[in-house]
Length: 249
Length: 297
Image 1 (cartoon, rainbow over the protein chains, first blue to last red):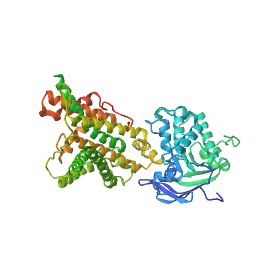
Image 2: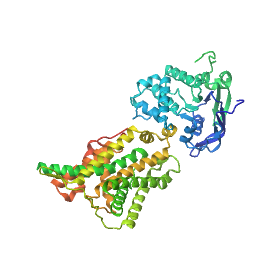
Image 3: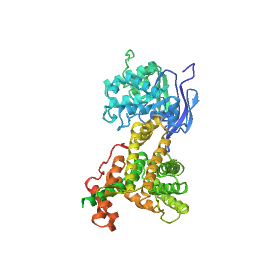
Image 4: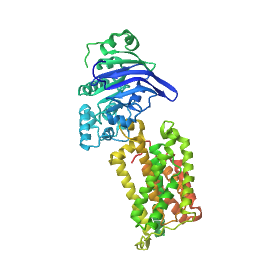
């Protein structure tokens, strides 16, 4: 990582739940405008790291700097106001509310009604199916549509960076492809993205830089092309075959 | 005979609206915070006393008395939540985790508020003499204005609450916090503030009930104990946590109580509500409008 100040800089981050320490000093940087993949097996601290960055859990040690200022220990809504948004795993929406109400809640920090409408139009542009379903309760949507609502809700406050926790989890392959294409488009439109993924090959094809986390520490890091070729990464996560580096999303 | 029944039903509906308002507050807190607030009867009592004080000491007319008592008690509720109850959540995990501790502090708060009221207003049952004017007459029926006020005011408050929860960003945010606090947080909602606000609104509804019943009953320190039990019966009959259910349950409890007192015996007035409760629980354990969706407006 060289040159300009990173958008998100996490240094020696320690944290966990109750008495269980999960993060043991993870260090990670995300450059402005980049898509960065955070990879690793179950229970290695991927989601915990995102939750610490978004403020859902208080870090025990280390620092988190976003856009030049320290955000560790801030409340989640204050971090959203600064332009850093997390989309959690599990496709959680507010089921009794319509798609549009769900999305509008994502723009809660935006007090200007016209700006909320603009943001809504942008989300419908990324996910046209949501426009057709906007007056339906989100409880009745399919898994892929729920994920779209979650990502869309994350975009509604027009953040400068979005953190996605396993956007491909529990979705059919063709749906995953569509979601990844949209993430690619969102990044191309200027959004900085940090994404946690189990779908390692897809994530590395999309991202320009990757981190592999193990036991709460960054184990391997490097440009995506390099990680795809890395024997350790390949053996651990890519199932032993060589990824198709030529494939373009 | 028919006139007598209509009379009893009208009385039942208006008392039921009062139960419904208190039950609405209890359900709002339950669906928003996952806790049962056992001091809600005392909030109702405080609302009535605050109303009475404004009405007599400041000689305000009834409507400003009602509005001001609602606002002041709402603020009192937010204060109690912020200063006392929230400490229980300092261990993390929010009110859901505080569970049993919250129940116990609710009881503690109820005793504390009764004693504070006792120190301020004394032990005597005080009249709340509101000149509502002559009853409205329909043929042989005479409908006292105080009942009209109760039903009218309660309906207005319920409509306003429904509109706020459905049509405003603050209302959406309150419902969002009721569904999922983490996701609400990540949407940029100030969750602790919304919890305070939910509590405040719930207490404001209790205060409205207290000021509305004042002119019919006396205002006294112990008045919160009985209403809490009735409001719980109402909330459970309607489906605990359901807002329309709380109102429906309140009205049913009120009407059953009134008809029972009129036809069977007034001595057992308090029994009828619980007979209804037991029957509903046997037939529909989740209550009439038992909900899976929270804070459904």
